[in-house]
Image (tube, rainbow, N blue to C red; front, side, top):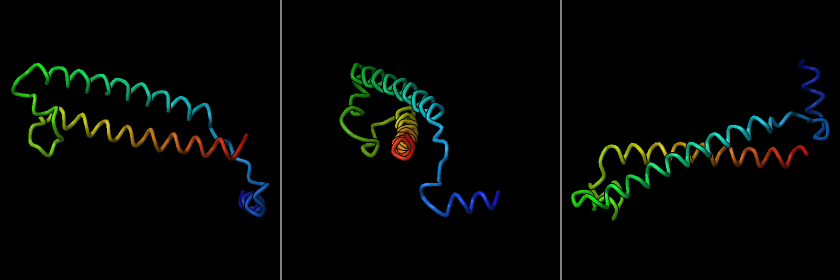
Length: 101
């Protein structure tokens, strides 16, 4: 294995690796579905907040304004984490597409 690795590293044209395209696509689709579900939850939460006079402040600012509840803060953190993962995977898949046809 070390000799093969040395050979593959000796010239860029020798470096052929699997891009795992199908697996990457499946994970991206899974993340897309998760993000769509979170987006719906957030929208439902906005509707609930707009109909409750004590929660309307939540629609006018960020968590820093003190109007957000724990549920909304947790949702924002979950969306942020999954969106970062999605963007990272998406960029990685795009780079892989450029490397190997």
